[in-house]
Image (cartoon, one colour):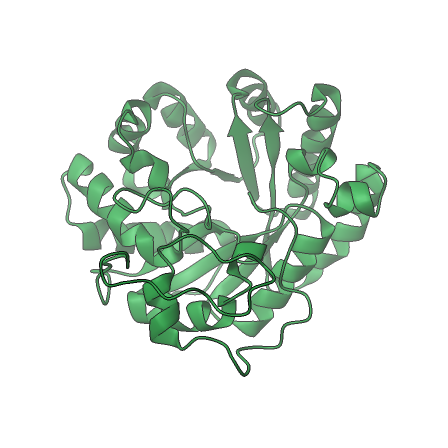
Length: 320
């Protein structure tokens, strides 16, 4: 997930913005702080050796480009992503401010769509609109977010769900997640679900409401992935599936039917191996696809084409 948005007030790549080639080259490294106006140049040894173009269309079903970690080079980076094969991105909001910024970004770039919603961590983050502007009244904030779903560039509700890793009150999380599940059904919008150390409660609510959507950064078992897919959920895999010890995610990716898979980054987080620990971007999905395609016994280009089609079907988007 992303913290506070750094997008507000930006109007495209202006004077002093790094060039596209530099931005793409630098994008594999640690992000510059928000107050720095240009990203630090990397040596050739540090730059991420990504292919000039992926073997198929890359659809990133979960990104956070409104994060302040992209402030230094956001526009140059996004402008260059189609050159790496990126065909689509769903930019996920985590509270009202990042949801507004996601819609703004989607209007700026024709290959970006927005998801709007409230992440459970926003209930305790002091700089999130949930706390800073609404004083913890998530119901009032959700009412303010709802009109954004009438925008043609808003494709989904989210990121929302349950996170039991952080000390967020469970009762508030559950009530907030249920409210967004009900909104998803009411408006017939897909939902993007966050589930961290909360499988039992997340699955119970998904069984109860049976929404359309995606369980992002999947960390459950192959058996759970299969029943979720049979119920109509898509399963999202990102860079974590390439990490050493990601046995469960790999097994789930191998077991699922091809029409239930999505690829994602969760950027700027979760860069795949061998870029782990660096700032992530959508072009790095080429590496995740390489790993998961090998597990499934198909060419990487086939997996990329399949997941592009799956994302467009779930989010109701035109063919790329």
